[in-house]
Image 1: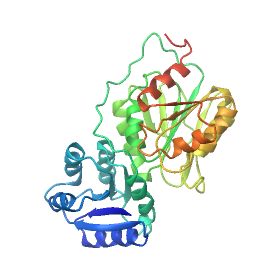
Image 2: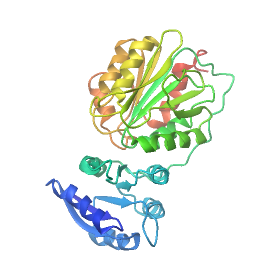
Image 3: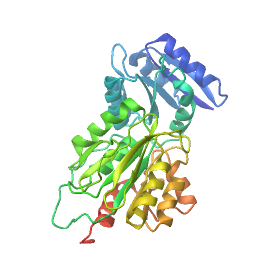
Image 4: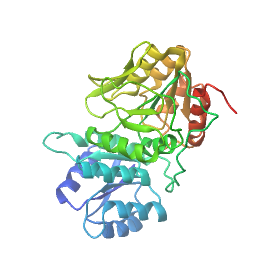
Length: 340
């Protein structure tokens, strides 16, 4: 039984969250709180396994409460956010602070937004929660790195915001062309790309159809109803095309990886990071079978060891590494001059 505390100032929203979770016998809603002050007392009294946390609340906003919680008593938190630009920015900050995942509040356009909540809370209950990380300095170009003709493709899901921030910050300004699919709502990806761009020496932005791949460019798949792929022969480009979910997701890591395997073949470097489920495992195997190089995040540093595990078990992962070593490994594999 997974014991959940719901923290939200809206009685209606608390009722909707409780109904979504109570329909599954694996969950027990042990309490509710209307603000962080009530939540603090409820945590002491009830010791829940997971908290669902609203972003905007009276007395103390959800972000300030989360920062204190992760510093004093780290525990799994799923953020409940509005699908607005401000909601996206605050939620991304929460994920960077250590929240495991986020779910959007239902609207007239997304009436079934809470359908994904049970799976997210279930994953959070088994997640590895860590204190807030210390960001390293961005990696500048140096005379020992010369990007060759390789293409880097990265896939991630639950826990991926923190992982991608840690990885991308280590890429040099002249890094190999890089494409990323992170499972994330449509309104969040533009803000996340901007957040990555502020901390990375290379240029990071949300991919657009037709964007040419080039050294020093990192493209993030837009969320929503489209997939990010690459195509071309001598001049590779991003393709952002509408389509149904693949491996349960849109955008799909499998869809990206399979296009990279077809197009870049032995020039590809595929990387699979923390995430729930199996998306990306089959695609990473395609990259390895095409002669490309493949890396997977190890269990000890994954928030949720689902996607990397699935890929490892089918032989798609050539090397499994802790998160802090994946950036240097990418740098080594894409460096025309080789290791120092």
